[in-house]
Image 1: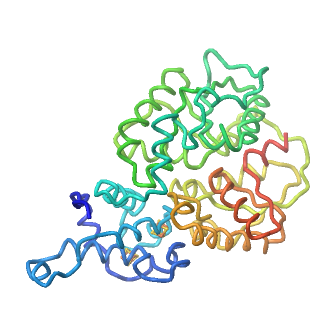
Image 2 (image 1 turned 60 degrees about the horizontal axis):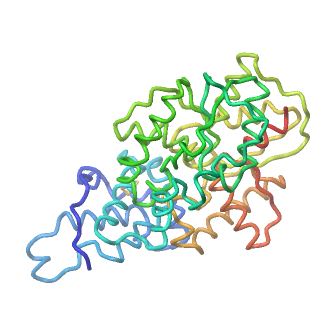
Image 3 (image 1 turned 90 degrees about the horizontal axis):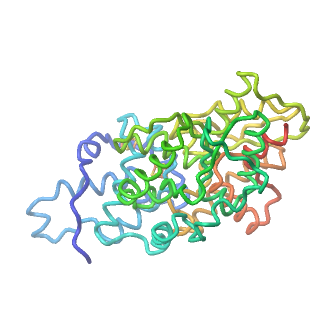
Length: 387
Ligand code: SF4
Ligand code: SF4
């Protein structure tokens, strides 16, 4: 085994834990795995034992040093934020699990299944390893890029390469409101949100964050708009947690739609008489605290009925897509998604709508694998249908 790197400075958080167990049943990884070491409390307990180890432990060769088994458990986590939400000791788990995974990576115990994502971003600046010069290939040739933009539309890797219909929907919304916007094309690098949850936060902080903030700032735009819950979280929260202060406002497209309607720049005229089951994306909801804006944006669409998938809001179950969970634990990740898909189907709607393209792709894969009769739609697409 490689040498264990120094534990991040989380001792105070570990000792704050009262072992009450509230975080255990809400953890989607625990719900699938069913053993305590895969739960937040189990991992906290293991790290506390390591921190408390004494000479007798060494003499008796007690295995209190985190090794491969602990590293495996560290990635039994989707980064969903449910543990932080319920913890009465206010342990900042959203940050803590990133630090713990980074500690394992530094100790040579990263997950090989996730290393290609880091390599892809290093080489091509997107998590899929696709050509950077094709990042804006989705943009219609007639689209006009403003010289002095009001906003930068931050597309994200997923909408740039895999879910381009989301990008086109956002452009439709911005055009309908006559918002002068610009995209960054190859100068938009991965925001790093998926990588930070996989244990690569050091690379994100040092290589991606400074470039991305500067690339947006130098357009002169006063605001960034994105339709990706993960990118939204990166700019709104992660970059600030890491000491940066981006000189522009950060909007999810649903907030921005609300602003445009309030300013009477956008009106919805086309009826969309359908039912959609709304899924709270973890990075947008629990982690960034944005519960109402996506619901409000959908309410603007005439005749659209939005149904709640239960449990919802701060108790919502995650999709299982985050933190590389589907790559490391495909069966468990599919199990988490299928429970959520079933809950969506139970609302009576034929379509699930959400604001995270990564969750959408995971849901789509699982629905297909398990032959579930439900389709997936992005919030920006649902909103754009009403224009
Ligand atoms: S909810 Fe918080 S205090 Fe309770 S066991 Fe989990 S980490 Fe510890
Ligand atoms: S963030 Fe979610 S998946 Fe990770 S330990 Fe907490 S509850 Fe479990």
